[in-house]
Length: 111
Ligand SMILES: [Zn+2]
Picture 1 (cartoon, rainbow, N blue to C red):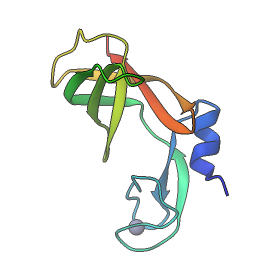
Picture 2: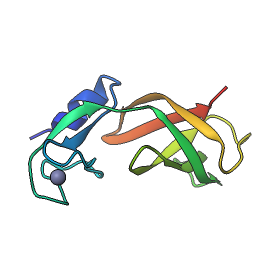
Picture 3: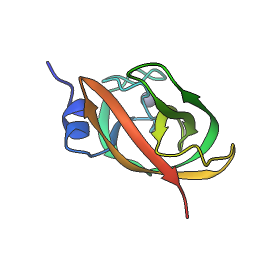
């Protein structure tokens, strides 16, 4: 069965599971909390983060700029349209979705 997380992502909505009891964000997405084993529910979270590090990939089919983004309470790997970046800069998720069955998160520097 397709996860609720994926369903929202397909529509370009970034919602992640948050524990209904202790409020911890479940990342990677999970239906139970890793901390207290309570149920999680999808919540809209901030789309802002800080770029931890980034690299340019020249792998065929995976060309592009990728970076680790520290979000509020979790980290994810995002892609960027340009390599005009610096570590520690504020970034914002401008688009997300599913591409060939894989989630993608497109970020841009915060202006
Ligand atoms: Zn919990």
